[in-house]
Length: 130
Image 1 (cartoon, helix red, strand yellow):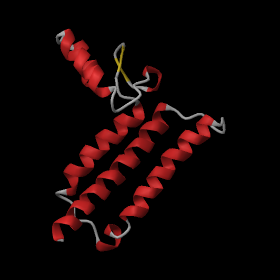
Image 2 (cartoon, one colour):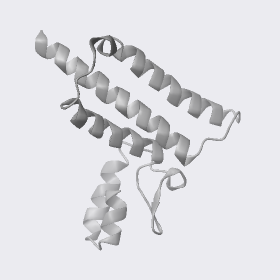
Image 3 (cartoon, helix red, strand yellow):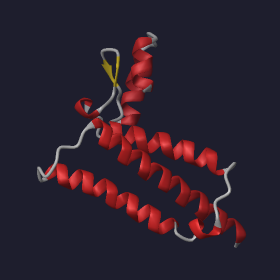
Image 4 (cartoon, one colour):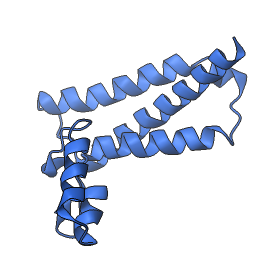
């Protein structure tokens, strides 16, 4: 997103170069698997966009939402299920069982990002109490 915005807002080339270089370390950055803003592809793929967006949103909302004890004890189950959800999307596409799309990659990214934020938040609370 930052990369797309920097080109639209006519930011200096070094800002674009820095954002591309940095983001390529955390994502494969395939333009065919990215959302577009105008004629520019976002540098992050749709799955990574979903992961990072929901991870940040989940961590922020964790400070305002209290989860029931029954959910807190199942954080590993949520995380494992979300990983399985992503793997099914990837493997089924890879073997030609079905063709994933930007929408399915974004949704699996959101599910994984939220479960990751829930896991990290609960883990930090547990460490805080010890």
